[in-house]
Structure formats: structure tokens, C-alpha cells
Amino acid sequence: MYLRTVRRKNKDGSVVEYVQLAHNYRHPKTGTPRAQILWNFGRADQLDLAALRRLALGIARFLDEKDAECIREKVSGTLPFDYLGSRDAGGTWFLDQLWQRLNVDKTLKRLLKERNYRTPVERLLFALVANRALNPSSKLAMEPWVSEEVLIRDLPEVEVHQLYRAMDFLLEAAEEIQHDVFFEVANLFNLEVDLLLLDTTTTYFEIEGEDAELRRRGYSKDGRADLAQVVVGFAVTREGIPVRCWVWPGNTSDQEVIEEVKRDLNGWRLGRVVAVLDTGFNSEDNRKALQGAGGHYIMGEKLRVGSKAAATEALTRGGKYRRLECGLEIKEVVLGDGAARRRYVVVRNPKEVEKDRKRREDIIKEVERRLAALKQLAGEPHKKAACELRAHPVFGRYIRQTKAGKLQLNRGKIREEARFDGKFLVSCSDDTLSAEDIVLGYKQLAVIERCFRDLKHVVDIRPVYHRLPDRIKAHVLLCWLALLLIRVAENETGKTWREMCRILRTLDVGIHRIGSEEVWRTSKLTKEQKELFKALDIKPPPPYYYISAPRKDSV
Image (tube, rainbow, N blue to C red; front, top):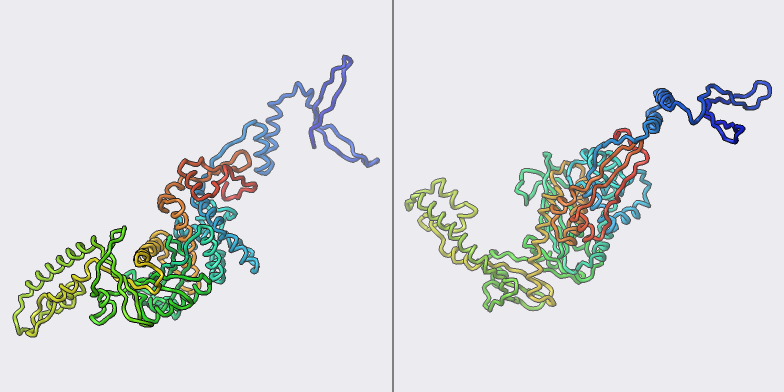
């Protein structure tokens, strides 16, 4: 059935239109189609429009909801407007644009060409990285996070098993990804990679027990020796950009990792690289390994290592300190000849000298008070309190025992400790570096310490609930990528990640239903948001997202 109009011309030349409800059928004898008039509505200019509207609405009751909605829209002459909710878009869009600027997406897609994945692995990995940077949570919690809370380009929803498969690929391609990402970042921002900061930290597990591969108990830098852990290592540029990460068993010491680190960095063919390390890595074997293939080191030295040690000799050598612009005072010392030759820089911080002295005086006052409280008598056996005081990790160093068995202040130890006030010692294998460059390079280890703080308190590397070694390593890689994006953004904008998250928090996408269609509308950008996108040379989100086929669960 259909509505049709027919025209009739009057004698005066005027034309009149009539509206009819018609139905086509085939003539039973001739087989030709003919129109059968079911109802005449009358002249078009004299129609009862209200009756036609009622008829249309009556017909709409028997149609599906989408078609009925279209009829109601036409009849009413207005489009119904419904607000269906909103999605956070600022943080995910910002990180996604940075992800593309660093060509991480292209690197992953190139590596994925050789594999026949049916899931959008690159998008899944970005979602995992964005989650670590914005709202660290478990992999299972990411399902509602992606489908209901945030807007991620070309990824309307995820399933947890897809995330685990993406993590497996990340680990498989870890070497190539880290290599390509490093050089993309180094070239894009013209990073100086001749000096790399190296250090390790530990992260523990919220599950009991150890395994034979990674989850082992060892020296915990988190103070949780009761839990199994892994050791995580980072290589960081002087600008604070983490460019490489490693994962070792939890019982691995710092002195056991240098050969692997050096071998991996040599594979990148970086040329001359000076590695900056803290005192925990200092050993003869590590120094030799770092000097292999034309490399060099700047390394912290332990001050209290015995009267015959080279470090102690460097501290006691005479010489005049010279003052740097940063306020530090330095003195260069060279010990030995030939292969045994070592170059040291003694550094004194005048601000720390007075702090160390006052701190020691406070400790000595407490030691004197505790010694007086013991009420010792010569020749009598020690009480439990005396043994505990002598074994105390802080107070015990300033106590000695006389031949008669009495505990008293060790004045010699106090004088010896005063020599170390405000000082630290650095050694270097590169003679082309000035003493100033050596000291400033070592001071930059504070950069990697900040990386580790952010690793634990911003991207929340722990708690780690994974059990399989491969999943643990993939989890660390995700945290590394998240920290890489954060640090690049901070360096380019001069703002902290916390500040950027605050600025981007109000940027969202409102979901509206207008008639039978959904319109996803981006909120208006603030001045701070525009400046943030401009600082990183990335484009802001478009004003509209159109969804041609809205999901039923969003209606």
C-alpha cells in the first residue's frame, strides 16, 4: 500500500490534487499490474491533517522501535533529545596523540604484520599503557574502564583474555620495541645518549611463596624482605627519559646485572656511552665490564671501607678544594699507575657539613644518656640492655668496650666520622671528562631515583598479582612505556603529570541521542588545555564523534 496523488484540470485551467490510499495488484486474466483505490482522502489542500497524524501514530504501534521513532519524529515535527552520559577523553586522547608522535603505534603495527592476530593488539597495548598512567588497575578491571569510563580511539571495548594475549606479544617483541622506541625518542627530541644513568629497584608481590624463576626473596629496597620480589633495572637519559628496562629474579644483587646491561646496550651500537651508577654496583669486575667496547663509567665509591682501601686514601690525600657554581666543592685525586690507575673526585657539600655534624651530635647525646642509664660496674657481666645498645645499628658505631668490659664512647670513631661530613666520593674511567662534568653527571642519579618513585607511586607497578614470569615481565614493560610517555610530556611542557591530569580532567565527550541517532560531542577546550596540546605539538580532539551504529548497552 501507498499514498498517491492524482491531478485533475478544471475548465478554468486550475489544477486540483487528490490524495488516495492505493494498492497494486495483478489482473487475474491479463497479468498486468493495476492500482486499486482503497480510500480517498480528498483534495490535498483540504486534508484533515490531525486525522492523518493519528493514523500514522496508530500504524507506528505495530512497527519496530527504530521505525516507530522515525514516524513519531516526523509527526511531531521535533527531534527528541536525551543525554546518555559522558566518557573521560582528555587523558586518553592526550596520551594517544603522544603515542603516535613517538611512532610507538607504527613500530607495533610493523612488528604485528608478521603475526596473524585478529584482535587490535596495538590498541589493546595502548589501553594497557594509558591505564597505568591514568588509573592503574587490574587487567580485569579494565573491561568496564574501557567500555564505560573512558574513550579510546578505535577500541569500544576489551575482554581480559585479549589483554593477556597482547601482553604476550609485547614480551615476544620486547627487544625490537625497546630498540625502535629508544631511537625514535632520541631522534625526535635530540636526546643526549652519551650518558646513561643505571640503577635498580625492587617490587614485591601480594601473593605468598616463591618460584624457581623470578619471584624470589632477597634484599628488599622497599623494606619487605618477608615477601617474594623481582629486581627491576632502568637505563635513563640525563633528561630523565627511561629508554630501557630489565627484570631479574628477586635475589639478584646489583653487582650481578652489569654484564647483561652492558651486552644489551652494546647491541644498540650507541658508540661512546658513559654509564653512571651508584655505589651498589662498584666492583672490579663491573668496572672492567663497563669499560668494554669503548665504554666508560662514573661510579659512586663507598666511604667507610677500611683504612687500607683506595677510597680512604683518596679522601685523606691533601689538596685544595675549588668551588663550583652549584655550590659544591671538589678536589681531584689520581691513584696508581698504568692499568691500576684510578681517577677520583672528592666532593664536599658545605650545606651538608653542618647537617651531618648536628645529626652526629644528637646521636652522641642519646648514646651518653643510654650509657648513663646502664649503671655499669667494672668487672660485672653485661645486662641485656648493654648488649642491645652495643649491637644497635645507629648508636653501636659510637660505642667501644674497655678491657674491663665497660661500654663507653668511642672518641676515635667520632673523630673519624667527622672527616666524612658533607662528603661523597666519585670515580671515573674517562679522562676526557672534566671533574665538574663527573660530579654533575653523578648528581643526576637523582633523576633515576625520581623515575623509581613515579614507577611505584604514579604508574603503580605494585601490587603485582601475576604469577607467570612472562606476565610479570610484560607488566614491567607496560609500566616502562607509561613512564616513558609521562616523562616526555613533563619534559616538553614543564608541568608535572599531576598538573596535566588536573588540566585534562574536564575534557570529556558527552553522549547524546537526538532522534534515532547518537552524537558524541567533545566539551569545549579550556585555555590551559589548548596550551598543553600546543606545547607538545599534538592536535586536540575533534568537536564531534559520530557513532553510526550505537551499541544497545549505551541506549
